[in-house]
Length: 431
Image 1 (spheres, one colour):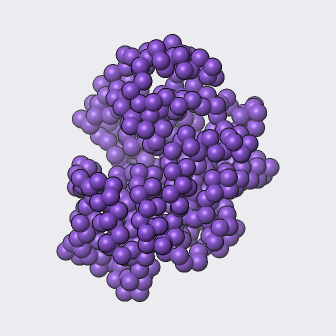
Image 2 (image 1 turned 135 degrees about the horizontal axis):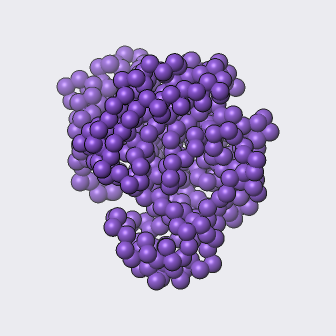
Image 3 (image 1 turned 60 degrees about the vertical axis):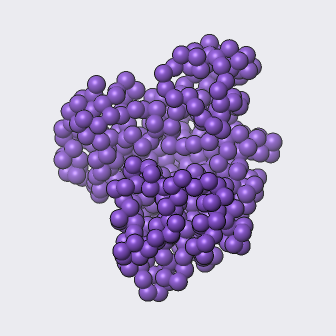
């Protein structure tokens, strides 16, 4: 049910307010302030929110200040399509993968610019996506699909021909949730027989062969990068290549650097591979985030996300001093020509450093030094997500980060120095 609330989007009334943009929102989405600022003078957001989710109760009132709220709590798929269609949107924008297929149905019904249902399924289903890319000859990790509810012995039997070590992850999902290293078939069997964590995934599981790092490394930070792209009128445009800091076990991100420190040749290779992946998936619309890993056998596509990458809005704004990728995504969703001018220039290097909890941790018992983070030269913003007494669980992925720090630097040596000071500033004790 749509509810304008007490403010009904008063902060963005005026020019552009007649444009109504559907924006699914959850705890992993960018700040309502960032989105509200991007929408100013352009459109009125129609927030698609499940208010039964505990995290949403804290931001509901804020969302209502920037637009209209549609509470989807308890709605079946058909009801959700009907409710969103009834808001008479001008456009649809995806910030996450959760409702992309449903949004494709709404867009098709209302003749709005968005992914087709086929493309939406490819962007959100790891099996479909990897099959399409593999069949087109793109380098992707070897993979095997395991159904939900599979027993240990059957998992071991199916995985006999699999390349190990491997990585087990949900067939649908993101943010490093339930991403688990697997050494061999015996360990895979034990995971599905004895592990205490919630193994229920309605879409099933995908087991991927682990890709070794490049020799020599492609980057001083990590061999994983992402290409930030957008499509307008079917043409692919690239914004930047984002680097990654070294990952925490097992495969958890610790932050990003924009632009990456890839060599010019490797950068061009990554851009070309991302463009080819988008092409074979038949993507025609929106902003995209393509993850690529450099290996001894050359770059491989890890995943294509049909949305803006996490942290990219802040990083791109800091590195360029002006570009809002959120506003760009809104323009594309509304069928407007993009206002960004390419190629972008990067007068500064932007970085984001995050602190995931250790694998062994269940709760934060003490924390100090967080006030010193803002004193590190170049730091622009600090967010503390967890504190003493808060439960933590590494299996829940990126959303379990303890803190997040954004900053800028003149060169990559300065980035290294800032990250060392950030890591040393905070002392955290765990149960």
